[in-house]
Length: 305
Image (cartoon, rainbow, N blue to C red):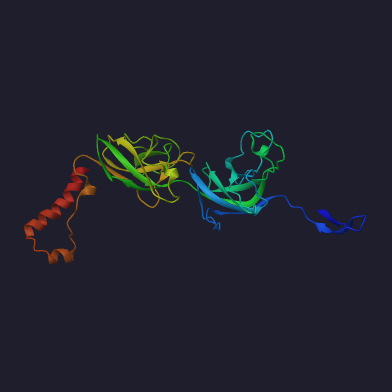
């Protein structure tokens, strides 16, 4: 708090005119990159996200830092483990009123939330590495960011020929060349980091190759990548996915991700006749052909077991 003093031109001394509260620069809100900075529903990790911050007295040398909710904004002295930093960046494009700015964040984390911290700086020296000149410490803004991991939403093809190299295409969000996929038994759980646990023979974990720079696509836009497998096991499996820095293998979002490995014609490609009573009554099939079709539908799957 400070005093405001005033002296008019015919006075020899200053007189107390009032009090003023001096506040440090601060960050009050974080939103999307729109001019209005709409509230964030999520921040996708492993990709650049352009966000808008609002505050008081902002400058292009101020910094944001995102840490684990369980971590302090500043790393405790002498602490080598337990403190988790997800990412940090300086502010960009600060407006004339110093109340709004953009920031480019690329966060790396397997957590669902992150604590947003802020540090103000009134001199270019603050931005220099290991410089403490004219800088404050990182403080908690009270803002918790909802974090979302990259995920897979589609897998093609749904069947593969045994002993044949097949290129599997995955579609998802924010895919990178460090992400990995594997094919496991359809009764197994996608979990952990082991590239070999529960796999079908030939389905061990491997990196994917993105077909475009997913980091340059609009957030939420679909991104595709490929990985090649040569399966030597005939049966049913499912594809598991893990992002770089993620929490381990997990199943594709919203789909079964099931893959059939077969020799010859895969059952998933067979169009079976409709044997419902209404269909049978409406058909003009001779009885001997109808009986043969029903028998074939029963015996073919049994022969493959």
